[in-house]
Structure formats: C-alpha cells, structure tokens
Image 1: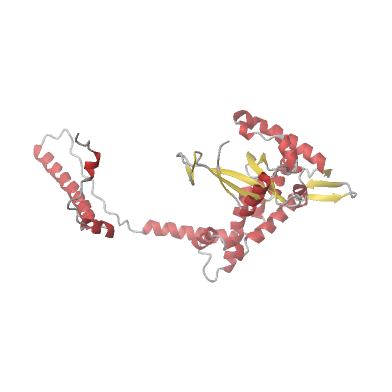
Image 2: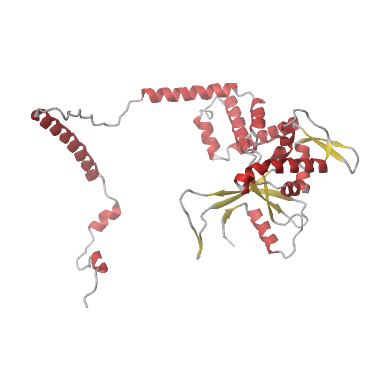
Length: 356
C-alpha cells in the first residue's frame, strides 16, 4: 500500500486514529471516501467522511486535496523514505456548500421554483441527474465519474439532512413527513450570515494575507472606516467564492453596494500606474554600437568601429570586475584565509591512487 504525507486538524487525526484501530466500525459512518461534485466547478472531487464520537451524532466531511509540484519530490520521515512527494491536505467543509450545488443543478434546467417533495424523492432525482451528467466527463477521465451511490450515501447522512433547512424551504406535514424545496433566497440569506461572520474585524485580522490586502488598497488609514468595512465584506465574499457556483457568487456580490470601494481602489491603481510612468529609469545601459555594413570597404571606418565596440565591452567588464572586487567577503571566508595550512594535505590527494 502506498504512503502519502497529509496535513489535517489535530482533533480529526485523533478521531481517525481511534477509528482505524477499532476492529468493528459503524456501517454508515466508517472511514470512507466519497467522490462528489465540487460546489464551485462541478468536477468530481474527493471527500472523506468521519465521525467525531462513537454515537455518530457529531460528524462532518473533509475535502481532500493533493498538492504536487512539476518536479519530482520525495519525503524523508525519520528512517523512512516516501517516494510520492505530494502533500495531501484535508480540510473540513460545510455540507451546506455541497448540498447547495446538488440541489441547484436540477433546478437550473427549470426556472420554476419547483414543488415541495420528501427527502427520499429529492435524493433519487439528484443522484440520477448528476450521475448521468458525469458520464460524459468520465469517458475522458474515469476519475471524474460521480456515482449515484456516493451521492445517495452523502445525502442520507443525518448531519447532511439537518443542513437541508439552510438551502431549502421546509414544510412539516406530519411528525413523519417533511417536504423540501430548494430556495435561492434561503441560500443567499445563509451566505450573507457567513459573510458577516468572516468580515468581523476579529476574524478578518487573524489572517496576515487579508490584512496586507486591505493595507495595499489604503483601507487601513485613519478616516476610511466605511471603506474598510466594505473591503472586509468583499474579501469575505472572495473567500466564499472558492465554494460557490458563478451565478450564486454573482448574486451574492450584487446584494452589497461596493461602488465607493471600487471607485477608491480604481483611484489607487491609477495613481500607482501614474507613478510608474514618471519614475526615472536608474538602470545603466550601454549604448548600442551601430554596426558597420559588411559592404563598407573603408578599412579605417571598420577599425574605428571595432575599437569603439571593444572599448565599451571592456568598460562594462571592468565595472563588473570592480564590483566583484569591492564585494566584502563573509566573516567565515576571511577567517579561513588566515588559517595555517602548513603540513596539510591537498584535497586532490584523497582522489589519487595510492602507490603500491
């Protein structure tokens, strides 16, 4: 079995370790990988189910991503060598994003809101629709295939069904019968709640990347509190965009007024371009030497041109040599220069054959 290096939260490591060491597992919540459509691209992606306790009341799902480089890499872990240099990253994902895409796809073909239906009917329609659509992609790449079984397994989980109220209108008919209908308004309302939490100063300033982005646009200056708030909100939308289809993301952004922020950012960018345009170019250049035509038969002009070109090249070379000469050696190099090497063997003697 191949070995891979992975990064995931500590609590999940502990949970998975305990579960993998157990001889018997819960049949519905065993450690299992599912291939589901990614909510942003719709392409088949890998997800891992895990339960946080033996009662399976608290469970979640992880997105599995592999980071690989163009050049071959190898991991050294203690005395073990892992030939596969990819880095596997597992991060928790809100099932709302996955449900949002699964329920949005069938409705996208029909502009009507649709009817309220029981959960089982929705699962059957969604699994059949998406599994059939993925067959075309699977012909080119089998890894892009999304099976109906994986979708049914995901949507049948208790913690997933409890998230239906965050993407659907819900009606309780009886104690045993509850019906659902996908609602774009409900989705936007819950997404805006996420934006509000992510744009809170305490949360936004936890990321140095976000703080640098705000500072780069001049939003951290005094007197720009309103623009700063809009900047945090827009960054929160961009964070959520990693898990949103294009049409839902567009509706989310248009639900906010970023006109003042966009005008401010455009002014900052224009000023930066203006400064670059007028900034003097301090780099020294060697003036190009006009070449003498080969047909020029005047030996004196040829000789003068060649001498001029040679002098320019020598001047550049002398400048480079002077820079190298003026460069100060490190403390370690200077110390080695003063070392007493009397009686020491040269390095080359270690690579010569010994006399018989």
